[in-house]
Length: 127
Image 1 (cartoon, one colour):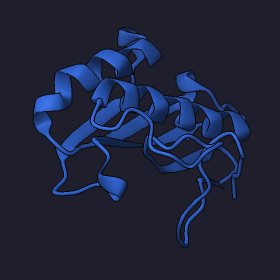
Image 2: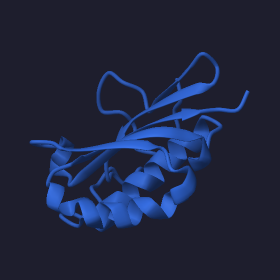
Image 3: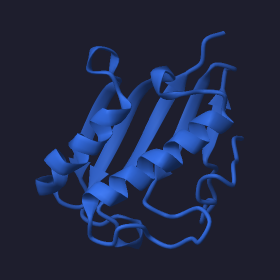
């Protein structure tokens, strides 16, 4: 199990991330919660929320001994697909286009705490 106070604590029966087979890291979906206050960041602002989500994921990856270059797959959940371009503008700052991970992006009927975006990822560590 991977746990860090630098990202929001789980609010249910799950962990921030799990390391499997020694090299694979499965990160739970992160939303725009400030890990210090537990408050939603950027209420209604998908750009601010995406930035907080990426910071939360980065904290979990770091706790697992990984970084953005280790990420091989992400899944993005949006409350409204019309937010895709804005989310993608923030998201793209974290990945080099030539080596960016595989990604799926879907619109969800509703996300936790009515946020605009949630992102999960899978990373593979170098042995």
